[in-house]
Length: 87
Image (tube, rainbow, N blue to C red):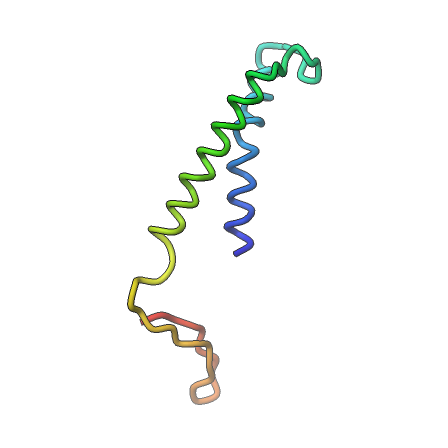
């Protein structure tokens, strides 16, 4: 679960980080308010939210156990630990 949370946070921050790298590459003042107009912040926020929405869809559809599978919790067999599985 925590991996998915960190993934979502990273996807939200990525457009802003790339914009900072872009500003650094063109030698602009990164902290100057003129480098961060409201329209640019809105665009970056929309892109970040779109990335998060796509990743939510990906995690929901393409990860996890198959539908109808049975969860077998972790247990001990003959004194050996057997991790949890789905069948």
